[in-house]
Each structure stands twice: as C-alpha cells, then as structure tokens.
Image 1 (cartoon, helix red, strand yellow):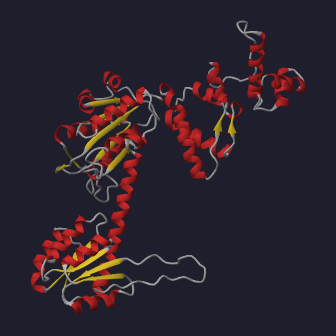
Image 2 (spheres, rainbow, N blue to C red):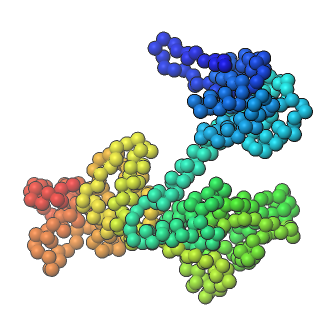
Image 3 (cartoon, one colour):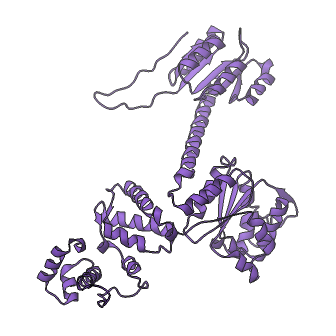
Length: 475
C-alpha cells in the first residue's frame, strides 16, 4: 500500500497558509493502474491506495475520505461492495466507478446505487481530474445544504420559539399534533404575533421539512397580479405575459405554501383556491391543462374571516376548507410572563450582531415595559430591542431613557397625551403625590434635572435634596 503525505507550507513564523488537500482513496487490484493514478493526482490531493475491497474497508474505518475511486471488477469483492460501504459511512465519501468498456451497464447500475459517476478504462486523466473537481464541488454543496437544514431545524424547532406562557404553550402543543399531518391550517392573530414563525415550525417539523417552504404575502400584491403569482401563467395569457411563468403552487410542490393575510385575496382567486383545495389541481392562467401538485397549505390572517363571510367579502365554503385546524396566536400583552425572556433574547442577539455589550434594564424601566400594551406585538418588541441596543451600547436603560408612550401606558394616559407633571391626587399621601409629580417632571425633562426643577417650580438644590431622599427616582 502506498500513502502519499502532503508537506505543510510554513513561512518563518507565519500561520498555516493553505487548506489541507482533499483525500482520495484509489481501489484497484492492478498495481500499475493504482500507482499511475496516484502519480497523476498526488500533486493536488492526499492519495491513499488499496489493492482490494477489504483493504479499502480497513482504510475507511481508520479515516474519512472525500472521494473514493474504485475499479468495478477486482479479485474478491467487487467495486459495488466498495460503493455500498461508502454509502454507509457517516462522513460519506463520493464514489466514482472505473470500468472496462464491456461493463458500462453495470457501471450505470452502480450510479443507481449511489455512485457519483463512472469512467471507462483506460482512464483519461484530464477527464478524471475534471470529474474529481466536480465531485468535490457537489460534496461541498451537500454539506452546505445539510448545515442550512440543521440551522433551520434549530431555528424553527419548538425549542427555538421563545416563551413558556400558558397561551404560547397551548399553541405549541397544537402545532406538535398538526405538524406531521396533511391538514390545512389557519393561523389567526394580530399583526406581529409570529404567524409566519409558527407556519415555518409546522413545515420544519413535518415530513416536508426538506422540501420548499414558499411564503406569499397576499396583501403586498396587487389584485390583478395575485392570481398569476399563485398559479402562474402561459405566454400571451394577458398583456405583458411575454413568457411562461411558474406560480408559487408549483414552486412549493412537495412542500408547504404559506399564504399570509389570506383575507386580502379577491373573489376570483378565492374560487381558484377553493377548487385547488377540493381537487388538488389547478390551471395556469391562459391554459386549460390541469396541473397536479402535492402542496400543504398554511394560511394566516389578522382579520375576522367569519365577519367577512357575513359581509360577503369572503366565501363561506372556502373558510370551511381553510380552517380544518385553526390556531389562535395570543398577543404579547397576554404573554407578559414571556416579556423578560424575549427582552433578554433579543437584546443579546442584537448586541452580538452589532458587537456591543448587552444592555441592562432598571426595575423602573422594566415596570414601564410590562405596563405597555405592545400593539405591534413581537415585531414591535424586536424593533425596540434593536433600537435600544444601538443607542445605549451596553449601558443601563432606566425609565427616563424610554419614549413617552411607555410612561403613558403605566399612568393610564392615552398615547399622544402630554407627559407634563400632573395634578396631585387626593387619594394619595402628600409624599406619594410629591413623588408622582417629581417623576413626571423628570420624564418630561428626559432626566435633565435643571429642566425638571423649572417644571416643578423649585430650585435645583431642592430637587437634589428630594432625589437624595428618594433614590429610586434618581436617573
């Protein structure tokens, strides 16, 4: 057995300058063939040689290879056994078969069993080198795809959805039950509650996870474009249709189609969507030929479809088809148990992305944030976290750093109302009234003590004395 080792190139005390070469195992019972191929490849690759299938098996147990180049007919076990062993490896190498002209049919069978390609003997070295490069590129793409799917699995796993409030827990329990099925799912909830995230989780935890997830935001498309976007069109179907277009249903074949804001689709598209749900087929615009696709449909809406049915805006029979399983996503104001966890997760994420220290929140600031109704839900919270991370850059966030709307939420005032010092309330003690007025003045002055003292009609020295007396108010 011949083993060629590459020398590692160093320049003085410099770091290692090049990547390790790809490793190739050549399996052939003809010595001249083995050594001839090795001489041709060893300049660019780390080459190992085996004279039999058994010898190749021993080498594959000892280390992993990127490419295995094997002869078909050998003494003992054939090259087909080598290919089978390659497919069993955890770090599966790409197998290339070498065969004489008379055994081409067998080589084609080897490709059906998992070989990447085959070469006829005598081997054309230029063609071999091109084939190896193509094989390595293919292997790299496979690894990138595997890593991408692994990241998607983590991101859209149930563990990747943040929170443990009772409302969210109930949603996830339903998702676990419905994900493996073929059932159409309707997600209901306010804007920003994470409907697309849940749709991705349904797809990623189903048997369709390795097939496409195709989202369509219906409200973002003009009415005259939506039907073509979903079902595609033939050339000449309408003015401007200069070529055939494949629609989103065809693009999602085998996978999941997510229709966001389903309540925005027009009457004509509702009819075609209903027909698809009943027949599992459709026609492109401008064509009478039916196309069958295997698509799982997940829809979402922030509107009340039942009320839309009553007003004649949405088809009742389509609603029945869509809500086979309905999942109601709770708004963030009903998930206050999750607020602290979400704040921490998003501030950590944006701190890492912007390479700044993680911000901290004072108790007073957290109290303000918990009292705020978060009308934009999770999306609004994410935007808030990104904004505060960029502006504060690792420092403490106190209540005076928060925008006016967060202070209004706690005091029960409507958004947009002035945050100027309010009148004293008879139901409170003199001290509590004074604290309330002082806090309100500091908020209005954005923490500026001189301005707050002016608003209160007291001296700056008196303000300092009050803050020393009540340190919890000190920004």
